[in-house]
Amino acid sequence: MNTADLGLPVDVPSTALFTDQYELTMLRAALKAGTAERRSVFEVFTRRLPDGRRYGVVAGTGRVLDAVENFRFDADVLGFLRERQIVDEETLDWLAGYRFSGDIWGYPEGEVYFPGSPIMRVEGSFAECVLLETVILSILNHDSAIAAAASRMASAAGGRPLIEMGARRTHELAAVAAARAAYVGGFTTTSDLAAGFRYGIPTVGTSAHAFTLLHDHERDAFRAQVDALGRGTTLLVDTYDVTEAVRMAVEVAGPELGAVRIDSGDLLLVAHRVRQQLDDLGATDTRIIVTSDLDEYAIASLAAAPVDAYGVGTQLVTGSGHPTASMVYKLVARAETADPKAPLVPVAKKSSGGKTSVGGRKWAARRLDENGIAEAEVVGTGIVPGELADRQLLVELVKGGEVVAREPLDVVRDRHAAARGNLPLSATQLSRGEPVIPTEYVPGRSGS
Image 1: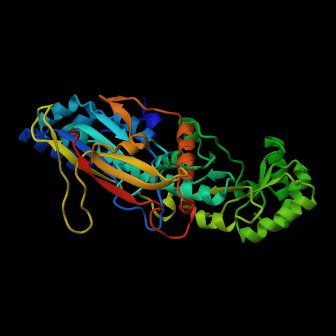
Image 2 (image 1 turned 90 degrees about the vertical axis):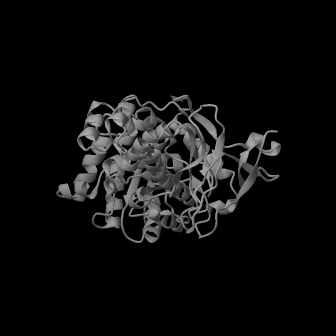
Image 3 (image 1 turned 45 degrees about the horizontal axis):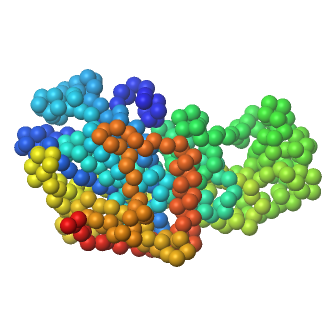
């Protein structure tokens, strides 16, 4: 695995500094106290969904696995920590040999989740697990937020293709991750070539208004594009006058013209007018693509319009108003000694202000109704009730430090479509509401 696969600049040798300083100062103190090697269980979950959202989408798991695998403290990183005196020499010596050797379980990527769902569980020594908090959360929070927005947009699109085109609206590396997450959520293509190169996502793109303005006449621009890309290309028709541009587009390309793109104006009205004009000109198979700062609500408002595909940028890569999934990474169980066989005891933060946690290593299962539709997210500790044994959600991702669950992105994308399809129909409503199914906690039961 090289840094290019992670979406990192080529001069970044590892993911080890994608962390907060307090992870290292906690490590330093725990090593000194003799508690660093206590067996520990951390869990990723969210206490609530973003306001109005009915479900969340797990995305970024594959990137997390890459990041954990590449979490190494090389000479340059250790030199930086030594120069800044962030940790002492004893801690630097420990970090020099760091390799995550524990286990990670989690919801499979593409699955849906709800408040309290144990989306990911990281087990190992306190020392090796605590260092992964920030990099895991930064990936899951970003990618899950984008995937959730993409999923809502895909539902609103009703099967019409969605093009991810937000690279210019976010950080260049975030753009690659956003394109991947959007594909998980149901988008079909991306304009970002780095995402296509790294993740195999289909890429598309033709021309912007600048190409039309480059030429002396709009017809010249259309002719140049058709000559270069063929009659199946997409011509941008709203630089000057849409009606005149559509007429010229069909004259230049013929009725075989692939598509026209509309990027401004009253999209509902303009799309109807353009469809009628294309049909009158004999271009009945020419598709209409609309862009222009769309979100799920704008896409839904165009459901009755003769639109064949949507291009979405800003609203997608910013999570359509919710740029984070608000996931946290909390210690939920730990041993009382460093003995590997010491039993785990539940631990949890107990404070006012809505930030309490439930201690103990969790399992999760989704209970279905008689029609096979989800009716509850069931979370508990201890023994899984027999009737839920075959409905468990967590799968093994890393075993003894080795990644065991890499999978193609198309598998993840299909999983999300299936998971969303197994939710109650109200999950696709864009109106504000509570999570589409409740989360139920089952008290822990021992195996005796």
